[in-house]
Length: 115
Image (cartoon, rainbow, N blue to C red):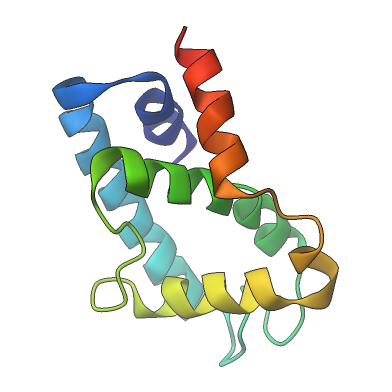
């Protein structure tokens, strides 16, 4: 998940096509993992935010940046319904919504990283 995402952040144009495919495959695995772990709850461990939610949730802003860069909706509801719902629940949770970085600021930082 992290490798292709990092590569896409640092890549511009058509060079990232293979990386995008790798990222989509990783998201499929995460969707499957969520189904197995969520116990019917909104988060990976059930009803409360846990370590895995925090670890993956810290990358949600970067996924938004990549959506803008690639023109591809990465957490498409029809493809990843559980991850899309998890993403919304995570970003709206009280402890998170005040500290999650804005995608626009991350996009500006990505431009600096590419240089």
